[in-house]
Amino acid sequence: MDTADNDPRLLVDLAVDGGLAATEREALRARLAGDESLCREEREMQRLHEALAAGRVVARPGFTAAVMAALPESAPWADRKLLGWRSVLGTLAAVLALALGAFGIAGARGADGVGFAAARAVVDFAASAALSGAGLLAASWRGVGMAVAAALDLPATVVFGIGVVAVNALLIALLRRPRRRRAALAAAVRRRR
Amino acid sequence: MARVLAGDQGSFGTLVERYQDRLVSFLYRMLRDLDTAHDLSQEVFLRVYQALDRFDPQFKFSTWTFRVAHNLGVDELRRRKVRWVPLQRQDAEDESPWERELPSAGPSPYQDLRNEQRGEAIQEAIDTLPGDYRELIVMRHYAELSYEEIAQLKRMPLGTVKNKLFRGRQMLKERLAAYLGD
Image (cartoon, rainbow over all chains, first blue to last red; front, side, top):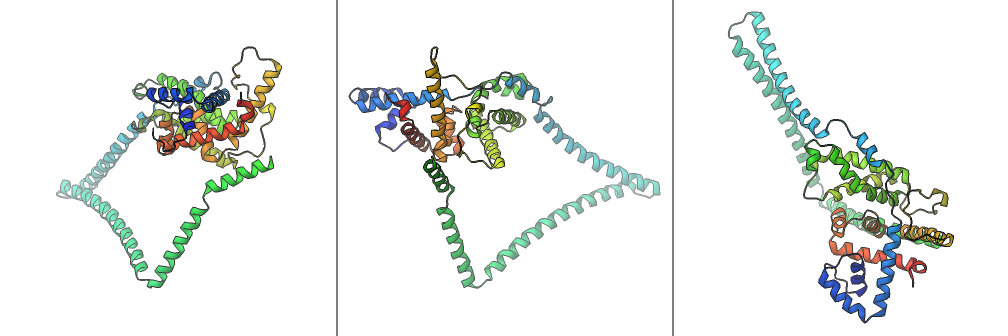
């Protein structure tokens, strides 16, 4: 048992719902034998379970067929795998096309050391792209660092004031938890009825 | 699920058949609209199918499916701006033709009326439960999820689930005393 509640009705509730082990059920059965109020609790709980079960609905006839008809013809995960391979192949093809293009241009100009120059152009291009990405990343981190440094440079009283306001806002948010609003609404509905 | 991932789409139908009633029942209790419950149930199965390869096997399939259903249900309620607690009771003509009959051998008109009254009283009693209790009652009795599945779905300790369900049922029992007594 994981519950700390010692209310014997909890055991009855769990027993009716099939949540007790065989040994616990046996112990409860012995306890029920001498306790009319617990026996009544068990009967009422069984009726409640039956009443709740009676309110279940079933899916319309043909529901499964409708779902199956709506499924995509090809498996989406297979498409995703294919897309992944396509991306890799597309990138490789683009690099290859770039290299071939460079070879072509250099060849058309009749320059010496064509192969080396073309390869170097492709490598330079890749290096430029990598440097641009790294530069953007570094700039982002630098921006975060500047924001933190600016916050730390604020006078101590301002930082303390912001802290007090934040703690108060947190407390107010906790006090106005949605559960309380829902309980108040349910109570209002009951009063109206 | 392994068979579906291996390309046997038909096996997904077995999963749909296994969960469809519980899913429709769960969404119907949440939204109080059988057509929407069916539409959203279909949407749940489609989403689950589309993300089947991303399923984390440390969770149960049912937990995952009902989490998707719960999220879709909450989105639908937000979209409609309708709360779980309705301010008006449902009209009798809105009753669903797919509601299961209450078990009784050859009910008399009086029994029919009493069953109908009891059904309405149960719905009203569930609707007026505090939100977290109502949610757990619906998950246990209409989605037919186990305590462990509910604990996983709601990210609650198992003992808390048991206690909340117990308290929720006690509230229901008090409100339905006229229908449950000896």
